[in-house]
Amino acid sequence: MMWRFKEYGDKIAALDDTGNAVTYTQLEELSDIFRKFAHRKLIFHICRNAVGSFAGYAAMINAGAVPVMIAEDMDKALMENLWNVYQPDFIWVPSERQAQFRDEGAVYQAYDYALVDVKETPDKGEELYGELALLLTTSGSTGSPKLVRQSYANIRANTESIVQYLELDETERPITTLPMNYTYGLSIINSHLYVGATLLMTQYTLVQKEFWEFLKSQQATSFGGVPYTYEMLKKLRYFRMELPSIRTMTQAGGKLTPELHKEFAEYAQTAGKKFVVMYGQTEATARMAYLPADKALEKAGSMGIAIPGGHFDLIDAQGNIIEEPDTVGELVYKGENVTLGYALSRSDLAKGDERGGRLETGDMAKRDRDGYYYIVGRKKRFLKMFGKRVNMDEIDCLVKEKFDGIECASTGVDDTMYIFVDNKEVINSVHGYVAEKIHINSSAIRVKYIASIPKNESGKTLYTKLEAYYD
Image 1 (cartoon, helix red, strand yellow):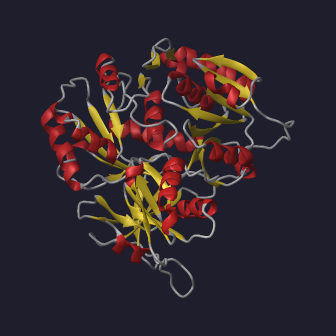
Image 2: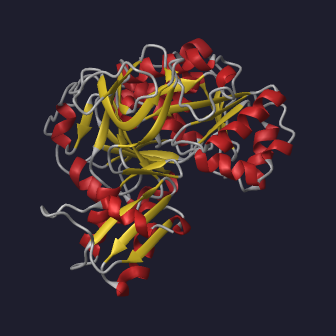
Image 3: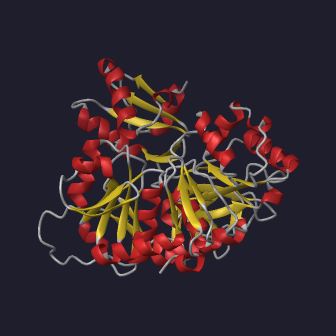
């Protein structure tokens, strides 16, 4: 078992802005339900920041069921693709949406959610790897069938590490600002479940007054955010707000600008709060590095040091370990939280550990003389879009499949995506299509015409040449 529900008894584990609540004793009872119906079965979990979603996830993990965490607003066609590839046994879905998947077949209902048997053919006895605990999407909402396979040991190791460096205990009351299908949002749930805290679940956003009313009325003690969250907080004049219950602010999901990092570090120091910047990837369960709160100002711009139990190396182009300070190399991480590997099909869920605790992050970094790391760029073609990781190669594929006969190349910088096409007539259509598919604010997407996509003699796109066309 991952969680010690019995230890915390009738304490409230989570409550949401609709008035729903669930205790740790009730989570134990729900675990028994999932154990009865879905032990070692694959469950598509349609996620929302509500008690039913939270309770279902916690119970699945403790019962040995294996959830695939899916954003509630995922595009229908992309959802169908995942469905066809993985053929789930059950779905845990908001009750009002059950009919979209199956009119009948609900074997259990609670907390405005339903557990629905959706297996269309008799169980063929496909086995899931014994230590497989959880499956998360890798690239936001592009619909790629590639999932990250996380084990029970991965979750436990990362959770215990986070609890240690954030000094969490059962008095914590974190409020959700991130979706629970996102690895960072889920890690907040995991670490607070582990210590018997109370999670405050809300679907309201920072720009809605109801969010702040809920935060204040429930005396939230912490929140987490991606760079865009902190940009919004500054615009909302967060520094002037009276929020005495907030103890800790955490940040991950991309690099803050050094200026914004410094501003929040200065605020935290003045207000007597902790501001903790972190670094992680889904492939490492969640977190790999953190910047201790007492170093937030001194080391502004740094992602910090390895989490307890983890280790970093910087590797040069020849594969050698870089020992000298302030020298750029690829960041390689080692730790028990490094996940098992990827899945591309249902049969891959039987695979064991393919990584052996080592992860080449694809990020380029340097280390200062005090041992603190700084991200300087990316080796692979990913962007962080408001905290979501989006694979540029998958964006290219989406556009080319939809708009037959055009050449396309996607690139950009964090929070701004550029899509270059060689047909002026499809600019507006491409813009709308991509924004809809990945659920990213359309203002962050730029579609531009270029007469010819630059390529080398072997036909590979020269993405660096496209930077000259950025705004």
